[in-house]
Length: 191
Image 1 (cartoon, rainbow, N blue to C red):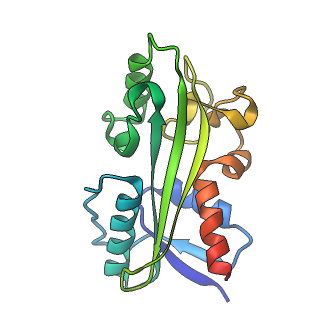
Image 2: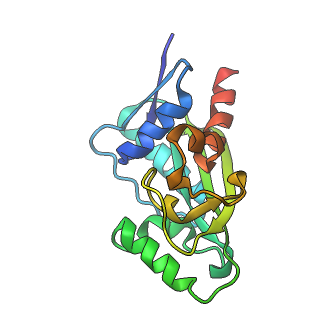
């Protein structure tokens, strides 16, 4: 029997990625109903994912899952971090700003972080986890797949030979921060 879980996002690409990773399970993820307007004022990825999950449960009355994810760059003291989506006005401006801030830096180490929170229909936490993907920031962007900072993130899983935007969606989902976090959630749901 298929279980439906509300995935607390307005990002259709993120929902598709979640569906792809969960493919073959008995779980279907759906977008929240109208009225989903979380105020992401947490100080951590975990706090923000809980805020979004709780809000999705409030408007839907259903079990809800949320993620909060971002890019943490060592040379920028972990920035943009929880502000990754608000680092600049558009995806391209965010990449340009990041590359600009790293222009004279040798340390390119970075990680993608994804915190996921699963709540029941009343907004009570059932399970919370985190997935991380380590890599480096490239000197220039490359690739057309994915979204966000994928075109400048070289993953250590490919020995820094490919950006996430150069990988197939399937390969990316195997190693991504979101894929790692979601697989833990799916394991929990199986039990």
